[in-house]
Image 1 (spheres, rainbow, N blue to C red):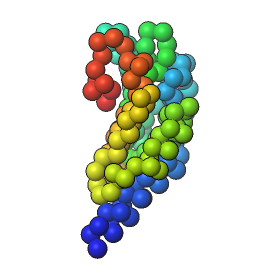
Image 2 (cartoon, helix red, strand yellow):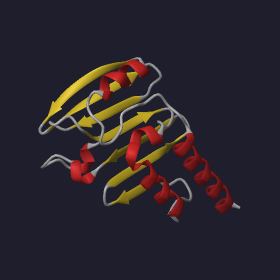
Image 3 (cartoon, rainbow, N blue to C red):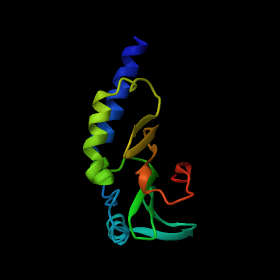
Length: 155
């Protein structure tokens, strides 16, 4: 019985990840111009922090959603992290990488229980965890990480 409940919970979590829409517009591989569009859509405050080799644009929405867009010096979004009461629109977040993510999730046998979801592919890493009213996650393209940056910094 407990396994059945865990299977239902995992299925519900996957459905939320793949289907819950949001107003977030940042996309992996997109350009930095999306930051201002995201700020307007989310009616969020923007805080920009320069780091060594990249810039973090942190959006704080009144709804409690926080989105961090990691932008390279060339103006490309190489990583995105979120933290808030709901999932962002994963299709919009991952853009051209969404199909890879969706296929990996469909083929994954490690979706049961309350464990975080992790997809690690050669050109994409996605981690998502949480529970109702608090979800967090990050997505990045490993080959786009600036030299010397550790993937753990995308949070």
